[in-house]
Image (cartoon, rainbow, N blue to C red):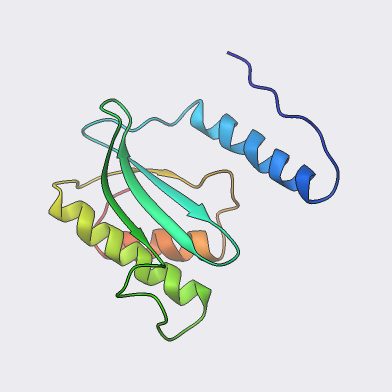
Length: 127
């Protein structure tokens, strides 16, 4: 199945390029019952992580920088991403998930994405 993304200019070009990267990644990555997919969505303001079983189509655990325990906390956006990573790992472990497949959503594995992943690993989630 071929997915086309229109070429545009400026910010629209960046969004189209990220969409192409995400499509390319999702061709290979799929969450199963044994190893669900850890999806990271990053915006300029916040970051969200979800653990998704693609076979059943269910979200098993999620965390966001908008959660009451994280919102308005101390530190920069990377520190908030670390808190989100540890919180999603804690919630995934409570749901019975030990290992996940990491889906960076077409974003570069650096900065907040890497901080979230490292915090989730430190909390005991296996990638």
